[in-house]
Length: 367
Image (cartoon, rainbow, N blue to C red; front, side, top):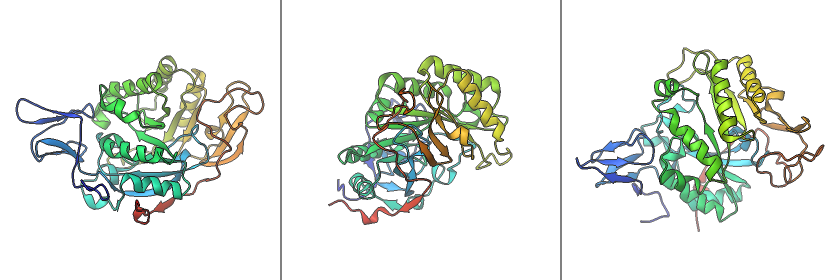
């Protein structure tokens, strides 16, 4: 295979043959069973020549330099630029998808830019990015491409970030994928099976399994995000149950982001999330012992600020993605009292701000 240009079909590992002639994809809990020529629900993994192949290896819906806080990650290399990209398709079917033009795409002309892993690494290095992020759609479905890109980036000392729903099987795929990730934001969409089944076409427990795995069996830095949707997952009782579960299973140091919904895709009938719902969720999390709880997709100075869990003084003051004050040492200790702030902090804070810069990778060909 010529690895200088994207292949039409990239061979994959996690699948097995069934007695009825079909092939089962084992990457995620959907376990799609495919006959020759069929694609999984994600659309990008297909049965070709009696094996499961990835059809989007080396192809992207576009590249952009973002602030790392947009992922959102507030405790991972704050203030730095991250080279972000995704492909097409998704293994969830969220009716409220905010990136539906990418994740629900069934047209390969969505994949407007092409780059092999070494191209991505060289571009990130030359552009001064501290990390790359697999985002916009879930990297689980293009895990082979993501893993190869991660390995290429690590050779340049560039960190890797997965923005994911956490819907991936254990016993192979999960371990193989996260072995190459330095950080993740896991989208904990709600805390009820009803919500997951009704609005995402998936199930809650595999997501919780992934989150527990990340905490207790890896060194991956991760944060959680919940999009608060009016009338669906915004009850105080559900937020109470969710945050208590986080405390009981993960402890107080995993940051939680409660972000505002806007009408999109197949949920145009819902109103935007009111500010008070986000504030309520944040306050419940803090009451239950979560040290770092944030609001997102809104201007909220207090809800965007990191406070010292010991002396309660502001450590990182943010308005949206702009950092206006930074009171941490290079290794992440409070300058006022010396308490450690959980996260990955490497030297002085970055100054990328809110800039969003689209990039064409055709100018960064591997040598």
